[in-house]
Length: 244
Image 1 (cartoon, rainbow, N blue to C red):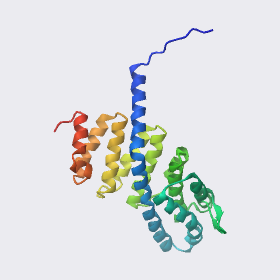
Image 2: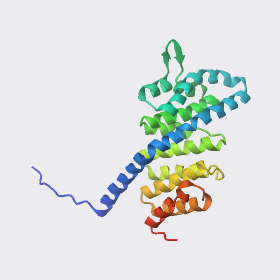
Image 3: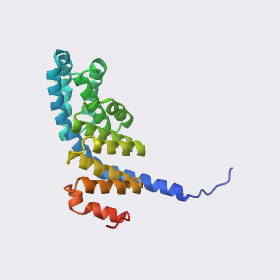
Image 4: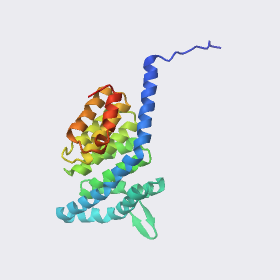
């Protein structure tokens, strides 16, 4: 029988555990409001791409026709909540009350180069994120092209940040949250919220220097943001040792 050994928890190991707990707490605190803010923009995605498909021409027609049933289900999930059963139908297809639903995965495979195929990647990545399959969420969200639609692109980066955060890939998560804030700096709603998210995440992973810089940037660029106006940002900065 081997001897029992007492393993000391070093300060570094203890700090890593604490940081992991803080990140988990961050996700639990922000996941629900952020995820619904993120998916609410999907309605905008659908409308924007519907317009694009109409102006691009007939080659989009078939893909747009096929994606519509899955897209309709997805839109309902985005406002009413995601479930594994509904996500499975959206991703893999099904026959519902005699009507065929073509899965987003098949549309990506057969029509990946179309606007419909592109937005299918966004919805697929968002769906996988909601059911906790983060590797797949990263894969499809990374392949999505926002095509200079800044609000859509910003939300895609936010969702990608969530997926990386859940994989404990802290640098990748923070980088994507920051990208979400820089897609369109003039957008005081989406950019400010993304910047606040990035600052909060940096704080959660104990990257205090980055957090301070991001909170200060938020104050400077977006003074009308509610977290700035109600003094919450100043309280956080004070907690981080910044006294102005």
